[in-house]
Amino acid sequence: MDVLSAPYVLEYTYQRSTGPVIGRFLTALRDGRLEGVRTATGRVLMPPLEYDPATGEATGEPVPLPPDGVVTTWAWVATPRPGHPLDRPFAWALIRIDGADTAMLHAVDAGAADAMRTGMRVTARWRAERTGSILDLACFVPVAPEAP
Picture 1 (cartoon, rainbow, N blue to C red):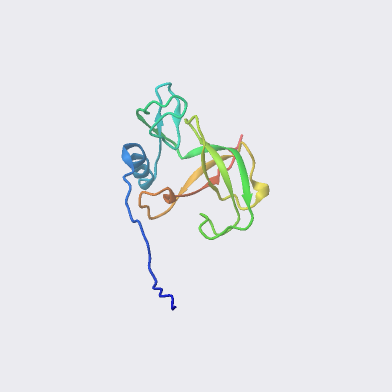
Picture 2 (picture 1 turned 60 degrees about the horizontal axis):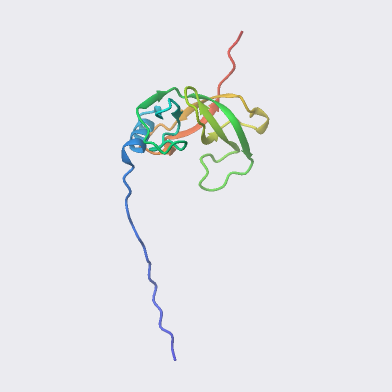
C-alpha cells in the first residue's frame, strides 16, 4: 500500500485590536513619546495596562512621561541572537521611567557590561522611522552624569 501525501499549510490568521489603552500607548511611541496610565489609587503604570493588577479595576487617565528613567536591575547579553533589538552586546534592563511606579523591560545600549549599573540614568533612543510598535523605542542609552 502506497501512502499518499501532499504539502499543506495550516494557518489561523487573525488581527487583534489593541484597544484604547494599548492603542494609545503605541500611538505615543509612534510619535516619539512615552505614556503611562493612572490607577484609581494614583499609581502610574508604565507600560500602561487596561486593568490595575493590584485591584482588578479599570485604569484611568493617560499620563505623559519623560523619556528618562532609572535602571532597577539588568542582565548582560554578550552574544545577541537573531531577533534581539541590537546586533551588538547590550543589557536587558528593568527601567522605571521618571514619574512611573512600575518598571518596563527594554534594551540598554551601554557599550560594555562594565558601563552598566543598577541605579544608572538612561534615556530613550527612538528609531528614525516609527510605525506604532514597541520597536519604535529602539533602546535606552546611558545619560552622562551632570557636572557639579
